[in-house]
Image 1 (cartoon, rainbow, N blue to C red):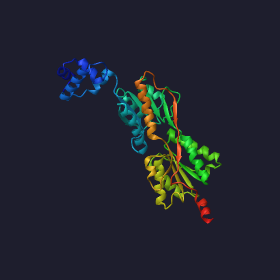
Image 2: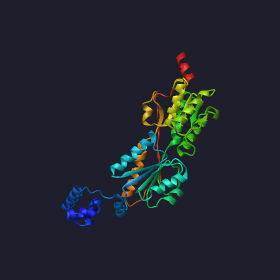
Image 3: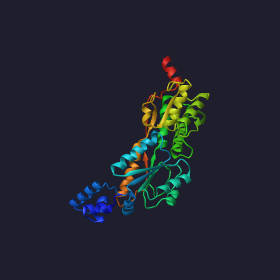
Image 4: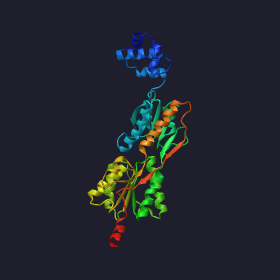
Length: 342
């Protein structure tokens, strides 16, 4: 295997000069740099990444730890992170952790020494876990982790506001019986969306009995099961607000099989506004979250911190949401009947 010494010998320079050229770490004349690149190309020399990182103390890699790598939400988030990272010459190292703190700790420890910074989205992470398992000198950015009062910056979604907007919109259409399919237990986003739903229902004067809450876990399967349950309820809700789009799509599938029309018989609204929401039939009304932008912001802030002398500012940045009305929502059936009668 060709070594850096072979390149130095062929180019007629020292090993240190080759190292400076390969790492871009020092002044080298244009003619020497050209000879080194020509020699490396002729010898098919590929720098050893591990050896380079020992010298430079940099891996040019960002670690990304997510609760899952499957689904459109995470695909969009990864796309945003990748856009920012590739534009600045950084590679990405991904890991997922579905379980609790033990699995999170193992995943974080596996990143040690391999990445220059770490982006984490997990309901199970906290400041203590990070301090115990990751060097304090390495920058960390948290996405929707619910961690407060630490030295780590946090980027959150304004979940409660988005949920309140959904309820206000449905109430404005004439709905009173609005069901909510909750997200996964222990998930920060799910808890805030439920909190916003309850607050808006109370403000609208809708009793708890008019707003049944059905357990979910952010999967299409959970939405389908919730839809089957909705078909058996009496009186049946005239609208359902799912804590994410995947569950909303599952609900629509179950309602369709139960021969209910969306939105004529029951309205369905999701959260996240994943790309497929605008292509299903009927198109899905959803709370828009700039998912890719969220990932891009986290990566950009991380890379800026790595490039400059100042650490990442430990502040909470809240991403605003907006309701995107499409074909899956409309007035309740009684309102439609009155309109047709008149």
